Length: 236
Image (cartoon, rainbow, N blue to C red; front, side):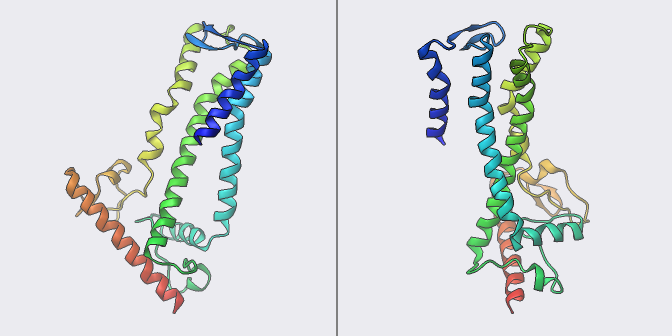
């Protein structure tokens, strides 16, 4: 990943050595940056520095989606979530009647593999949310640069668009904040999304860090145990 970022940065800088574009203070960005006043170079910069990384990420997520779409684990999780209406944990229960077609047991499965699988699914969801946030927040600025309209709009609006683009990393926590399933209270009501990080115990929110970690660990252990018991039922 670091090597890929370095290569992209170098490719963006490479035309400057032959006189196509340069580095100078930009009144639009209020800092020293690439010569976006040269329209052809601005297009090159957007394609290489923005659209290419997004395209690679899109292809990677497409491959992940195609692989996950044929996974019994993923289909079992989605179907059971639709049937129940809510989700209680990363490991979803399945009924015995559906076990013939929805058995979520991968070959040579064990507790660590099962937990790792769902951890990977959660991480994929988080990274996809971050990608969507990045795309949405950078799109207005990219459109202005490509259409060469940065000098034709109000400075106030341009500053807002600029801050929106560069502020995308400041709201990535929105994707991380909902990385796990929303917890369910004992009365069956869905709890607030932010409370999943504080962990429920008896319907109450735990603030103490040690107690929160202990409760989360117990919940994951119980999820794994419940999931493995269902897997054994499917294999019987």
